[in-house]
Structure formats: structure tokens, C-alpha cells
Length: 159
Ligand SMILES: [Cu+2]
Image (cartoon, rainbow, N blue to C red; front, top):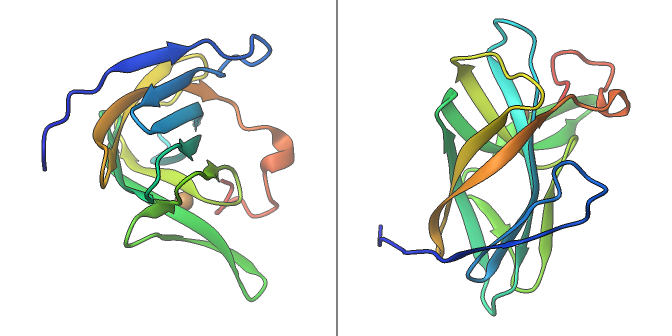
């Protein structure tokens, strides 16, 4: 992979949200990155963010990694009959030119497995996102407690 030197400009977002930091990396804007907190000894969690592609060509999010989890995946939720299931997106998540993709509870999300620490609210953790054209960028993500309204009845797939 080519090595990119990225000039990061911070745009101060709305003061009404604790995690409204917008990050601009060339043609990609990343906003509202957050990670769901976990109980002690929990092995998985999920992360969410908004990705906007200001460019003229489609971009693709290929992978995610972090220091707090041995494995990271980009996943989507979908109904399999009456059961909500999640599965990896094998070819990466396409962010079409000029569009915004929302990774949010019940939809596209980042999945972190084999956690090596408890994820506690108010922490800020770093994620490495690798894009097809942009290359790899490191972003801060705030740990938040998931709103109870986003918890489906199934505990097994509660993200
Ligand atoms: Cu998942």
C-alpha cells in the first residue's frame, strides 16, 4: 500500500454533542465516531461513525483495526427470516462519490472482537481505518453507553 501523508484539519462541530468532532482527510470527512461501552470481561463491542465522500470517485472502507481488540470487521445487520443477523462485508463498504454513509446501531457497524480491555464510557480510543484510495487514517472515537432505545430484545445481537 502506498504511504500517504495526510493533512488533518479539525473542524469544530456543534457544541451540543459530546462527540461531534469532524475530521477531514483529503476527500473524506469522518464524523461522530463512537464505540459502545462493555461490561467487564466482555469480548466484543461495536463502533459507529459517519463517512462522507466529497470526491468525484467512489471510495471504499476496506478494514478497521485498534489496539483494544485483536480483530476488527466491517459488518452489516440484516433480517434472516425473523432473526436479525450480522455478517462481515467481504469487499469493503462503498462510500459513493458525493454521498454520506451512516454506520449506526441496527445497520452498518464496526465490530471489534477479542477485546483486551473493558470499554468504559468517557474513554477516547483510537481506530485505524483503511480506505482503498485514501489509505490508512487514525481517528479518535469516544466511548458511549448505547441508548436503551437502540437495544433490540435479542441480547445476542444487541448492537
Ligand atoms: Cu456486529
